[in-house]
Length: 176
Image (tube, rainbow, N blue to C red; front, side, top):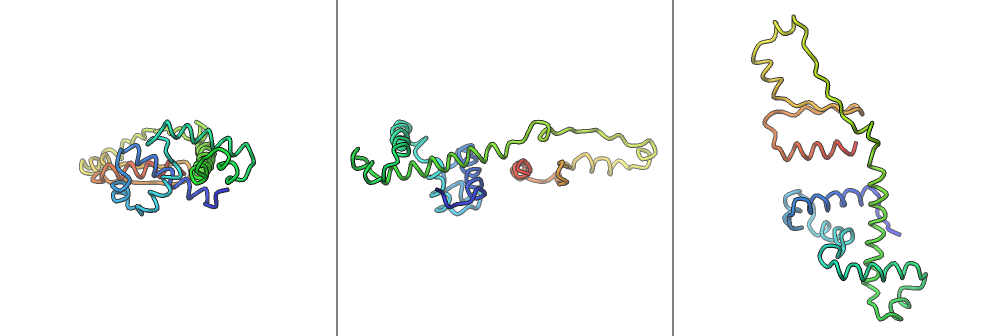
């Protein structure tokens, strides 16, 4: 059984997803997003394993690891009788445990559609407010972005913010 917390696994899983989505090398991603390279590389290996780097071998090892888990045998006996490297079987078992937890956490983080659906409502100004507003005030309000979610979080984003920061803010808000 894995000795790491769900939060730890979810945090690194999201980094793995983002790194693959952006197509950056592990080192470049770690530098750009200020994560410890060695730690990210190690945990990414456990989460991703050889799924993309060696898909044929991954399928073969996956089958062997599932056979090992079903057998109930000690790993030394199982791998010895099949002339397998016990380290490789052990790594795949760890990978499978990470995958099971990530699958469960993904289901927990998915909310019903009613809760995640955002409704935007246009609020019209009262006629006297329109007359009192100056043109500069209206322009300033049009350039700001304000996000309010149902859990009471309100985020105001100024017009000169970097688009990557907006993406990060939205990704953080998705998990609330």
